[in-house]
Length: 499
Image (cartoon, rainbow, N blue to C red; front, side, top):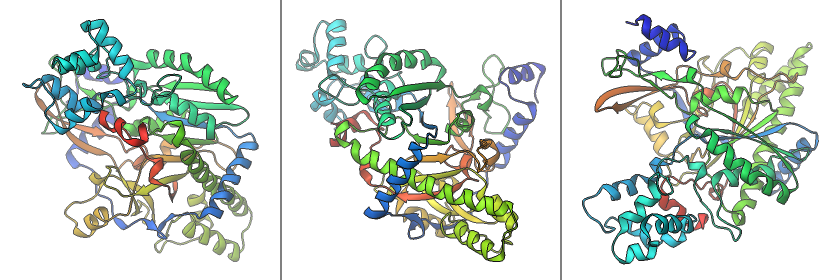
């Protein structure tokens, strides 16, 4: 099935022939649905700390930072903003010329509220000889939208989301990249330094670096810290081969194989290369202006405090297991694993070897918010490969829609995942875990796409916060909805939280 030419193409990406064979087999067999125990809820897998507990966790985090640990803020930022502007691309191509849909009317009615208004007005003046108001007055709405989207204007249709102007300030508008630098200074700085890592697409890397270099010094002065900012790209070796509907390799017009990015699960490789004790992970578009940051900062400290408190106890227990633990100690450690780390042995023999396996692995604490109908994976108690049950973040595609009981759990789940994680990635002896060892490879996704009008099947690796972290210790903490303000469409920037 694979020619010499194919093998050369595969080798250039750092992929093996066996990996391609495995991927093609996965198209044939698909991925098994996960076996669920229950949707996680407060009191059953989700912690809802009271005010006194929150203060204790914030203190635990402050003490941890004071001990000189290395903390990194990891921001997946390679996504292009094109999906944000789907409605406006449709308007530019429509056979009508005035705002007609509710979305279009909202955009133009409130256009002055966008943080990019002044920049857009300037490019309209340059390209059209008129500003936004004059163009709208003469009914030339499409020129305004085109100048926002196209390369000769702001180029927002092609830029990464992290480079768009999101929020207005007296001193000038800010991008999400800048808001993440501010967050890094507010809760992730230690020893007077904030380490921030952006994963960026290859096409935008130099532009992203230049923008960071332009802005970082100002924030460093404002917050009295130094920044250590690093970048990485999704590795070509994590790309996956595309398949035809009959599961044979999909080929380009020249006969070469088509490869596609392996989804955010590919970033487990990037995460694995970060030198850190603790890593915060948060999506690029989930940022708020400074007036709303105190709540975000407090809860970031709370979930980090939960993490380091649990890790400290786990490390103490691992040292006990290194010796000759008594039956009473084994019982106490088993109670910690089951009650605090929400891992149920389900009839497995609970001895020192079992407890060591469940304690000596990466740990993550995930903020979850109450379900208000926003899209996103949900927190579940799920069966693992070894028969135990623990907490996982699941996407709808991992759940058997023909199973009425599971669908009820999914649709009636009280919380969902806003991608608000803090991770501990070193063992009790200070050595970094090799994170790919903890991926559940049976949790990938297959989706239908097209290329050049031809249907194809695409394979995504186990998601970064789904199957890629399946074999981590996981704890969920309820965080306020105010800490979750994603921007999925351009009009989301008109929400009160982004004004």
